[in-house]
Length: 169
Image 1 (tube, rainbow, N blue to C red):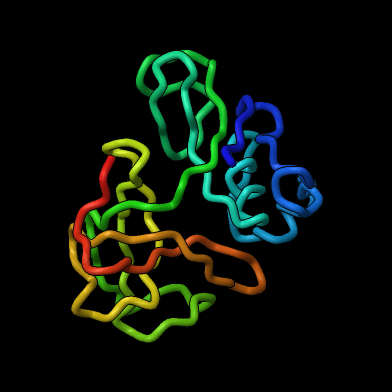
Image 2: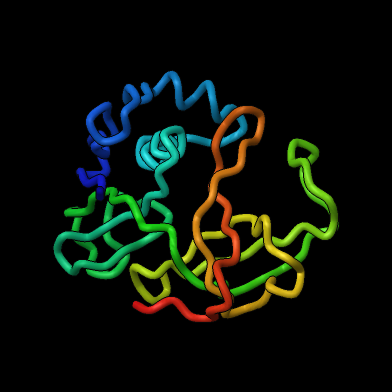
């Protein structure tokens, strides 16, 4: 199911689409105290609370974008919505961190990937690469969305899928 709505309104994240009550603004602020939230990006974080990964979608030019913006970066229309993405993609860039913020429980080196999502070439999200043997941690590796918890809050991560190295578009 794809969530869709104007960025300035709610993104359709409700009990009917998730089986959970739609998180309130107060819920989002409480669960993401270290994130600088605003009237646009709050919808991305609201979706994370119900384990949905979202991106912006332009109804005019039919292009995806991230981070969420009130105006399409491709055609400059304000006719943008928030939609759930499938969560499949390929590793576009990979780095291994040896230091990180103290709130993240990891064992160095900690793989961090820029994942190009299957929805559109150039649509990327940066997230940890988890449950993936070091030999499978490579650029071009097919990955799928999984969820990790940090301080009791869900965050997106990716793990390698079976042997394939490309996700069809």
